[in-house]
Image (cartoon, rainbow, N blue to C red):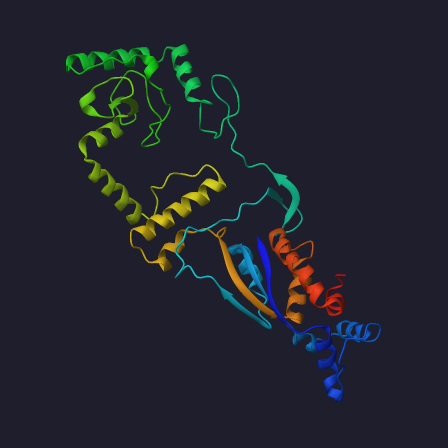
Length: 347
């Protein structure tokens, strides 16, 4: 998240002169020790109109959920934001440095205690942590060794060899040439290696290039259903099916994300794909999450910025909103040292 100063109009002297104009008076320069007391008096007794004359413009970059929270402050403000109706480049997303637990004593807000949402799991063979809970092995090597050690591949491998010999198809592979996955790499369904009926999830040996036969480097284990689909349809038919299923069902067939960062990346991939297929930007943007970073120019009065500051830097304000609002403080103090201090107490 970023805040960049763009320009400003006015200073502490403008506020003083706005307060004294009703008496037909003005000062040519700010007088510390006198004018600062006037500013403090105005702020203390809520005579706020003079503070509305100076204006400051910033450029913000923050996630949409933060921008929408800040957009409530519209008194004395002008807001111009980037539009996904026109901009079609790949979006950026906000990735928090850590996740916070929900607050126990209030309906909204959060505590400072972190939450570990990293996926957990252990390799079935060696017990070391793996990336996702549904993975059974830490590596393809451990996966292959596990199948060898349990001798679970022997029966089905012998059946594949016998079938290839019967059909007079080259079969020079050994069990060591296979990865033995637990899930179908195409359909992500659990593979069944046990003897019995030929169900859709039954493990099946696939020739990547059919003409080469079952030779090292040209074989993979997939589900029987995937093997049927791959063997029955042409490459163009498979591409057409995937594309149309994606559009007709609104992305239902997109791969399930295993982490927040994965989810953001897949949303961006789908957005880029929709744009490349000719979908209008104003509809394609619907798939993007609130974590997408947006940019806007925000111009407001000194008074308006002080109200944003006073509300959004409080401890009960959302941490991300508090973080970005705090970035305006140094600039406002530098531009209006006495007025900013009188309005916010930020010295």
